[in-house]
Image (cartoon, rainbow, N blue to C red; front, side, top):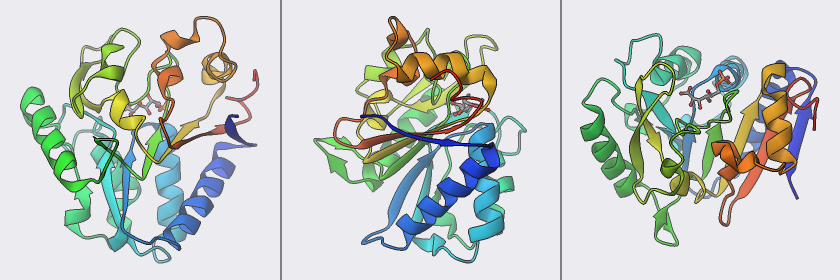
Length: 238
Ligand code: 6PG
């Protein structure tokens, strides 16, 4: 059974997600480890949280990690960290130690190893694999998620926590969590908006023939839950 939530607009989606996230933060029995993605929909959600929940959530109990990061400096306009800082982090009272930035400005191979060590040392394990409480994912028009692209499917099953990926068009290097780590999360949420995603969304959610070529279709949490937050445009072919 697929857990699909459809909203009229991206703004309604952001509001609904923020309300759900707030409710979760009000009943924590321990700190929450969340891995977040870049992209336009996550950005909308971060801005909504900043505008409406900056003083309602005890951010000291929230630990931010990144699902992926472009190999650029943190002040680069391509940086997922910069997007998150400008949309949310600079508006909330959160200890620096709760912000676990992937150092896109460091050597990619070294940072993939280093970030794997950081995440591996700080997170609890489930079935021998580290387990995030929540992973927020976007999806590209090619069905990529995180920085796992259709021509790099080995990143789905890698036994590493992080790997170096390469954008298939720009060649830009990225650091990404592997599919195995994402699938070991307690809760995985895709946030997808826009008509340009509708075809892939429908193929993935309808398990269409050949849809497993899309990395997003291979995100099937082992024991955790999988939810899709969509706007009407992205959902219009389901
Ligand atoms: C990134 C993201 C990536 C993103 C999708 C969707 O670093 O770009 O992690 O996986 O979520 O490309 O992005 P849009 O929502 O902007 O289409």
